Image (cartoon, rainbow, N blue to C red; front, side, top):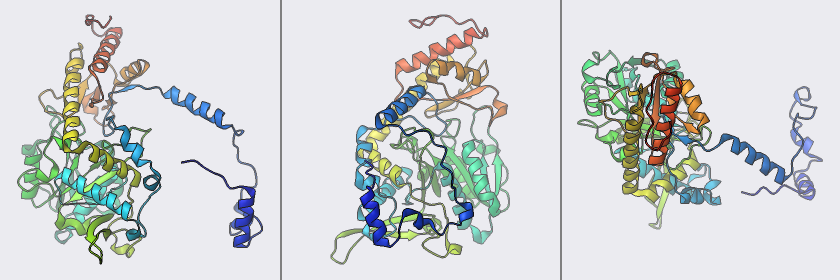
Amino acid sequence: MPFVPHTEDDVRRMLEAIGVDDVEALFDEIPEEIRLRRPLELPEALSEAEVTRLMMDRAERDGRPVCFAGAGAYDHHVPAAVWEIATRGELYTAYTPYQAEASQGTLQLLYEFQTMIAGLMAMEVANASLYDGASALAEAVLMAVRAGRRGGGRRVLLPRTVHPAYRRTVETIVSPQGIELVEIDYDRRRGVIDPGALPEAPEGLAALVVQQPNHFGCLEEADALTDWAHRHGALVIGVANPVAAAVLAPPGEWGEAGADIAAGEGQPLGVPLSSGGPYFGFLCARKRLVRQMPGRIVGRTVDAEGRTAYTLTLQAREQHIRRSKATSNICTNQGLMVTAATIHMALLGPDGLERVALASHARARELRAALAAVPGVEPLFPETPFFHEFPLRLPLPARDLLRALGAQNVLGGVPLAGDYPELGESLLVCATETRTPEDIAAYARHLERIVARQGLFRCPTRPGGGG
């Protein structure tokens, strides 16, 4: 949106209207001793053409690498129409409906988002989004503990197969509130939780968290885990990939009764990778838990004349009710990201989203076969079903490999050893529908040459690939 600065005449007239002599008088409440009286250390101003050139130069330094990294942030195709619509002025500048019923367009959009994401997760209610997937999981844990507070349960089973950043975020947010997170290890051969090896449910168990697919890209035995938790009187929190939910059983359909809460990261739905964000989280639940849900819920009704109208039916923020009664104070709606996601889901529809998921899975299978053919490289969990990412065991340090691949304009994956030292030199690799057979073949050729150059294995020349 263009920026039109105020002219000196504009400034003069505004100052006259509010009855002050100059702009400095607007800040007279700031104590003199803390005011900055020296110029800011800023570079010389540039012309528009110079700024454009500078930004283009900096963008070119980043390059356009082929992305095989995932681990919670995925390089999906975003149709051009998504952001062409999302950046229209009436959507781009809308933040959040503080005067709710005057914002019918914003409310309708949020209502449509809630309807879509609840349907995708096979849940009954959804709120109008959260900051990101990690904080959404933390809110889900708090919600589960509140829902079971009459029984006093304050222990939550948090498996190591859940994304490490999510686990750290949950620990940061919930541990000061007296909630105990109990770590559950995984089967080293399969990369998933073994339902048969779960311990006896600890006293005061409130919930079990299940990520599907898990951080390794592997498919957990979600049905068995859900039924185990329910037998022990605990709620189940599903952490779901919304694209995977188009082809896998969604949390609401796990086991005999389904998960109780579903949370996750919405970035795969129309939000491009952009230097780490912004992203948005989603949170869905069973209707019986709706009053424990943080944030806003938009409902559809009719006005006095029988016309469709939208309204905030639940406002659990501390701005709206007494702080002691609020369920959360971090439930801001990531409005623009939700707008893009809603447009994205509407454009693709259920069939389109399913095609994206199936294509991503197919590309990942092709990628794993190609990379595992390199001598010394092998899948960590070869027998376990996966969706669109998987871990590999490497014959050289993962960071050395990634540096060499980066020189070939390839983002090769995410190292696992920092969070899972027991896995040794390993790499989490991902493919979405945007990766082509040519991309996959190029990655395999580069990997083969790098391994051979290290003198670790003697690699034959691939057909058409060079030595």
